[in-house]
Structures are given as C-alpha cells and as structure tokens.
Image (cartoon, rainbow, N blue to C red; front, side, top):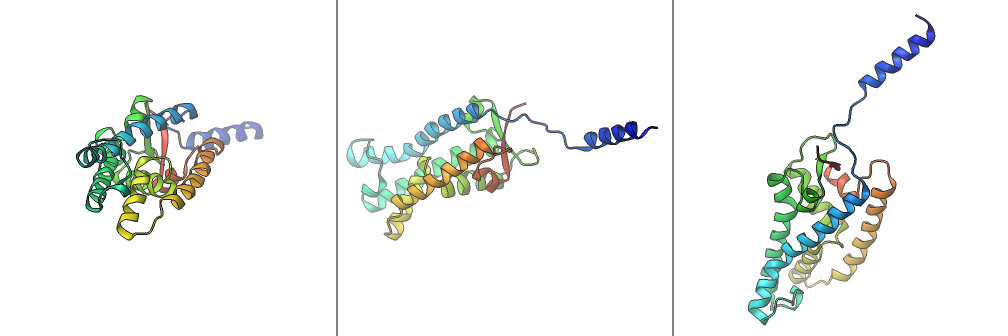
Amino acid sequence: MSKKNKKSSNLVKKIDKSPKKMYEDVPLTRRFLSYLIDWYLGGLATAFPIAMISQKLFGSMLKQNILEFPKPYGLIAGCLGFVFALFYFVVVPTWITKGQTLGKKICKIQIVKDNEEEITFKNMFLRQLVGIIVVEGSLVTASAIWHQIFTLLTGIDIVSGLMYVGLAICVVSAGMVIFTKDHKAIHDYIGSTRVVMCK
C-alpha cells in the first residue's frame, strides 16, 4: 500500500470514529421566534394569578406590580405567579413536552443535553430557573416577580439594579448565541443543554 493510500485510509478511520450529530442546529430566526412566543405565553402564565388577586383587591386586572399590593397579598400573588412560571418553563418541558416549551413546540425545536440525550429535571431547573430567570433575569416576567418577592421579604429594593445587570448579561448571552460556533447562551452552559431541531 502506498503512503498516500495509507494516509487516506487513516483519515477515513478518524472520520468514522468522530461522533455523529443526531440533531440539526437551529436557525437563529427560529430560536428567536420561539423566544418571543415563550416570552409572551410565559408572561401570561406568570401574570395570571397576579391578575386574579389584583381583580379581587382593586377591581382591575391591570395592576401587576406586587410591591403596590397590601403586603400579604403581594407576597401571595408573587409566589403564585412564580409557581405558574415554573410550571410553564420547567414542568411542561421536562415532563409533558420533552424538552419543549410551547414556543419551542410551535417552532419545532427542542432542548436536549449537551450529549444529545433527553433533558432531565436537573437540566431544566438549572437552565430555566437559575440561568434564565435568576442570572440573565431581565427579559422574562418571572425575573421581575422574583426581584419583587425579594424586595417584599427583605425591604431591600433590588428591582432596578438587577434589571440593568440582567439586561447586560442578556446582551452578552444573545451575542454568544449569534457569534459563537456552538450557538449556546449562558443559560445553556449553566444547564448543560443545547437547542436543536426536532427529528
């Protein structure tokens, strides 16, 4: 066997041993559209219990700032809103739609582990709650709710400060999705996940 054929044979062996991707990468426009859908639907889910309590207290569903509610009701409304947000962003994609929020389901994309296995509760909890709501925390309604709950419990107003910090982190995270090879946001790294096209 000639040296050239031997090199070609070794190259083919190396290529065959490289891991094959099971999923296709997601176009940025599709990922952004799913984000917009989830931002809207997740916001509605989070706001629903707050609106119901607001209606009962003030005769209007429009009052959504729980800092303006009488203290026990503001805390109750905030906690219920946060529970509804966790249901939408963590429970549904973990156990009901297998890696898909409703926005991702509509756009035919899903969240998987880095190794392309099905996500677990731990992945979704870290990705959605810690990564999106707490760390990036400015572009989802649930983030504002947890800031307000913290303020109600401690008396320390962190709402404005964390909004600006979260916005800066969101810009960096969006830049990572757009400009890096893996197209992973900060919350994807926190949850050891990635977003892929559905099979």
